[in-house]
Image 1 (cartoon, chains in turn purple, yellow):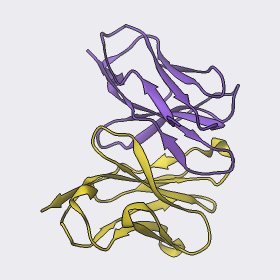
Image 2 (tube, rainbow over the protein chains, first blue to last red):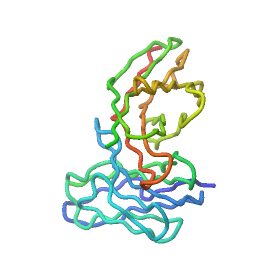
Image 3 (cartoon, each protein chain N blue to C red):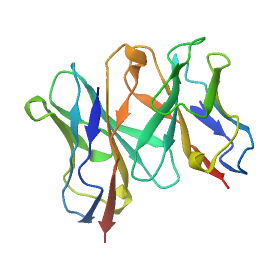
Length: 112
Length: 115
């Protein structure tokens, strides 16, 4: 099992460009999450999907959209990137009935 | 609202010394508590978790944590630190079920190990 995978690993965007961060899991997770990690701020939840077909806003959703394409895939889209969105983005999945989340390796995004 | 406080931003210990990382939480119901570790350039790996039962839980890599309800704390300990333990450690709290099982993370403690 690959677990939770994310693509790309690194990305540089110019202000105003758009892009989609991809996340896929082969662990049969029901719930999936997108976080951003900034120095000194820990992980902050952007969006989550409690189950296939549902998505909800987290703590910092502005400037982002998500799609739960199917049970395996949960993508994060930046429609018009801003320098404030420079961050490391993590996707995570969770099994039904368990509390812990399993994290992907992250995408390091720089917006210039 | 749930919250997690990790009061120590940086901690330095000598290899072989004992370690305690502090975590205090605020949660309105019975919390589900976690410790994760993040090595440089990597994702987060679960060290241990606690929901109920014995308040001293054992995790991977020789770590343990003790839940103290009266102090709203869930401190992480290791009797003898190895150089490979240098990493960032995150405490998290969430519900056992419901509410999307959203976790709230602390801001992390960066551990440096001196040889």
